[in-house]
Length: 117
Length: 121
Image 1 (cartoon, rainbow over the protein chains, first blue to last red):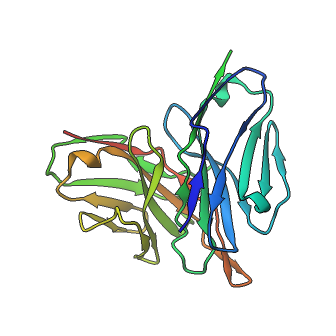
Image 2: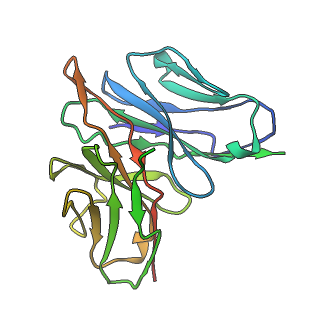
């Protein structure tokens, strides 16, 4: 069975601080995909990144960066120079990569990030 | 940019009534999904749909629930005999077809609609 754990339920930072959101996952599959989604106060789910289990390269996109470490089953998300608009709930998610599988996403419990001016 | 659209944005229904939540997935996507998020909790998978049939469903998706793709564009979730605990935000999502490499699927990102908030009174 798959499981995603986001141990930090809430984080509060002051604008311009860097912040890292932790994600730890469990799966018996050797091939899988990891995702991060953002849920702003308006409620929609916004896709941020997908990473497959073969690719452990870190990725940077503007102020966002992701650190995937297969050895520790972690896929952490860092926001540098945080802004008030980054305030949202962030979800880490996992899916298997089996042929004809439903590709269901298993979500973590989410981390609520509050960035104060 | 194409997006998944869901209607209505908010649905209020009396307990015991049937409700249909509607979704229009992105037009070239082949996989469709429903998820549920009870207020303040995590997003939970309900069902995935491909090639006009359910490909996977969770324990939550019991006989009370059904999905349908009645035409080439809509994807619906029907909840029969609604209960108070069905109150939640329901998200529809869609993704492109899978590509295969080394006999595994390359899972395309699922793109979510803005959700329908279902309130059961």
